[in-house]
Length: 120
Length: 106
Image (cartoon, rainbow over all chains, first blue to last red; front, side, top):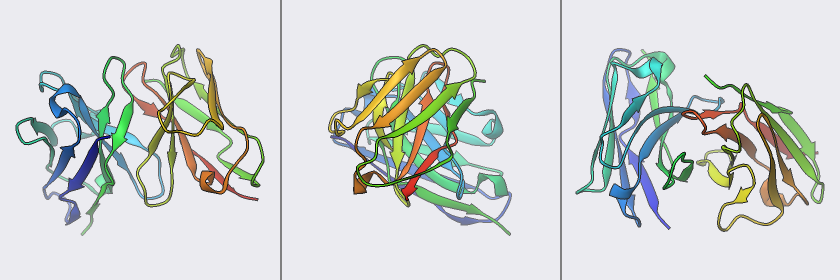
């Protein structure tokens, strides 16, 4: 059974930047696509960005294109989300999740989440 | 984009009750439908995938059905640990979650 652990959240002013990290353990990290999902306070779940095991396919939801950059380092079992030009509407708990093998895929392992608050 | 609509938004029930949550997709998604359970302050947990397949370790009182645009999650006999919010998710085209159904104590 794998595990994911996010870090890097915090309080940031509008226009600022944050880098989230997701540490994976207990499974062959490079075999799985990974994804970031966010949940605004009291709201539902929305996928933000995902990438394939080899980083050859990268996806972003329209609202973060040009502002967020996803990446991974398979040698370190790590995934990252660089968030620039942050807006109040980016305030949320950010979860990293593993996509199940095969296609199409569900999110079969989740981290505990890291809170990002964008406010002046 | 595919929209997912759950009903009801809130469901009041008692331990032992049979509970059914409905999820409707704005277009056909075949059986590419998953259900997640989320408790306050915790990450979502995958319960069911491909509309009716139970994730390993999930109790047998949970079941899913449906295809195309109409899906249901059923809890055959509600247990104290089941009070939570449940989300459906389509994964036929990218991923979209329903707005959630909160199962609360009656």
